Length: 419
Image 1 (cartoon, rainbow, N blue to C red):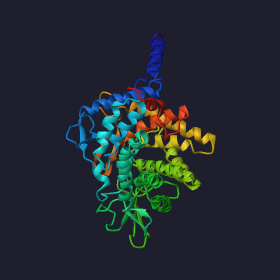
Image 2: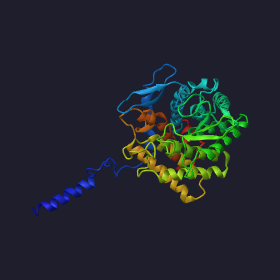
Image 3: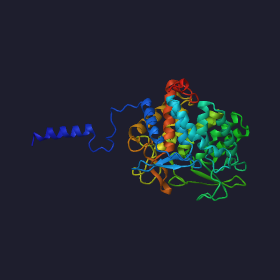
Image 4: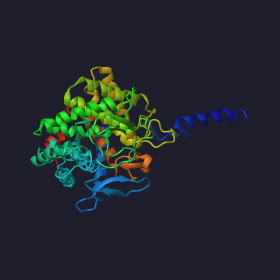
């Protein structure tokens, strides 16, 4: 018996060292986060996806179900249609390889009708600025600029001056009391299209619309702790707030992870475009509550107040989105310690996504484990195109930050136009 005790102790020590029985044992102390390696991985995965898209002049990849390798394809009207061409433009920027220009141009041009047809909803920024916007930034193609400007004018038609915000869904949506005026937090991202257009040949009123939307949303969309409602319903005639509700979150008073991410990203961008310190302060406050409530691995559950945590789906898309936002927010923070905190957290988020959320051989997307619309039972634990887009954007932003390159400028590889 006495001889067995040292042996048992040795086995226990070995088990602890190797992580026996630990559900997090997939994490390895030998893992080193390397931006260039992860960018190469994204290029490899996107190359696979290109071979899977039907050559029908309309199909764009949106998502892949768990345990599947098959993309579900959508057309240009889908709100996520700009993420795939935007991803291709980012790959051109990240690699400098001319071959990506042709593909990015092809899939961007699928979205051209959005610039000349009445607005289907508020998502024109996601659709056209992610695609043609990145394309124009990297190539200066004047045709792209014309499409962007026309689309900004189209988006502006949804602005209700009685309310001061852009209508998000011009149709019947559950719990939105149509035909009253609804605005969702996602809409903050689309303001970038208006800001850009106002400074690049568009009407100056587009700037005023974007500022009005940001201000009214700031006033009505947030609780005292700076967590965001998903949607606010306004009286379309008087502009009075009727109620704050959710559509994709757990409850009206819960913090839906991606929604909070839209707020952090959105107000960071509004500060960049206006240089008004109130937006920087607000972006930092929305970021603080998000960071304070994250689980240890920094990847949020789909809703911070979901009832069955830790047995709830994660949302890699929210993690990628916030990582990208924090990297930009770090460049504006006046406190160097706070700036470092944002970068450190963003890098840890990207490292976690890279080590434990990449699709690799499971499918040709970049990331697994995103949650689209859990209350509707859709896209739960999926690979989704916007998760990939913001993951790649965050990697590029971090690479530029470390190299001292402004985010609006292309990486040196792109400038050299190498093949």
